[in-house]
Amino acid sequence: MTNEPTERNAAAPAQPQPIQPPGAASPTPTADNQPATTLEAVISPLLTDLLYPSESDEPVKFVTCYLAQETPLTDVQLKEWQMVPPSTYVEERPVADFWSPVLTQEDWYGDEETKRTTAFQQLKAALDAHLTNQQLFRQGDTEITVYLLGRQADGTRAGVQTMVVES
Image 1 (cartoon, rainbow, N blue to C red):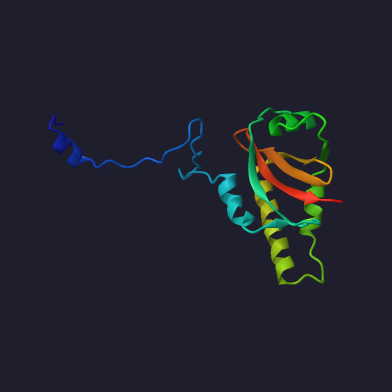
Image 2 (cartoon, rainbow, N blue to C red):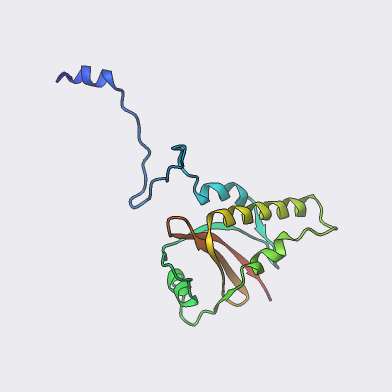
């Protein structure tokens, strides 16, 4: 080893390190020492141009939630997370209510509807593979924000959000 700066620097070129936001967890290595793929990385391509059908077709977005307790979420916790007034209507529904309108393949579907159904089937498979204890919440009355959330392996919650219009 030398004290000459030019010799030290020539021996081992610096390797840039990815910058992570404060508090961000490093990717968990898998058995073959490759970083595990995050849920967001898996589903982001599936969400491109994916619209959830209702009276107004709306985009589906990836969301994370800071609530990481073991027990299921409550409607009160969802209101606090979203910072909505206590008077806002929030209900929990079966997770199947989210999937039933988008996973059924109808005989009359054209190419666009078939493509959408396939994308939702892939989304469901990805969410099922990465999330446990999934819950579905609906917030609002006519313009309803829908959250499908579950627990990731690290204990944090993530999922998807969309809006449905029901008049």
